[in-house]
Length: 167
Image 1 (cartoon, rainbow, N blue to C red):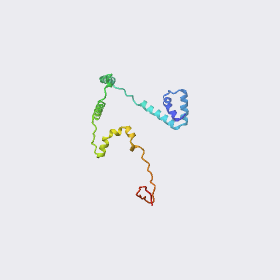
Image 2: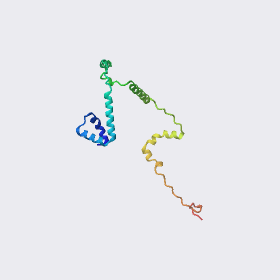
Image 3: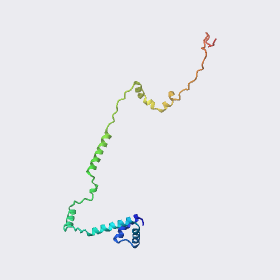
C-alpha cells in the first residue's frame, strides 16, 4: 500500500471502522513504513490528550438564548431578492443618464478653411458623384502613350512653295 492510499484509511483504522481487508493492508504498511507508523502514533497521542480534557457543557440557558436571537432576526420577504442593491441602482441610473447625455450631444463641425479651388470642387460635387459622367470623361481614361519624335539631324528649310524640301 502506498503512503497516499494509506493516509485515506488511517483514521478509519484508528477508529476501528475499517474493514478486515483494509485493516490487514494498513497493518502491513505500518510494519514497513516508519514515517506512517510515527504519524499513526501521533494521532493516537492526540486522541488520548483530547479524551483526558474535560468536556465543556454549554450553560443551561444557551439553547434558549440562541433560539431567542434567531427568532428576533427580521424575516426576509420572499421577493426581497428582486430588489437591487443601492449601489447597483445608483450605477445603473448614472449609466443611463450618461448614455442619454452623450447620445443627445451635437457633433462640433468646424468650418472648412481652404482655397478657392477646393470650394469649386465641393460646388461641383454632384457632377463628380454621377458615375456616367465620370465613366465617359476623357481625362479619367488611360493616359496617352508618349510618342517619340524622331531626331532630325538638321532643320528643314522651307522654300517659297512651302513644300518643305531641304538643300
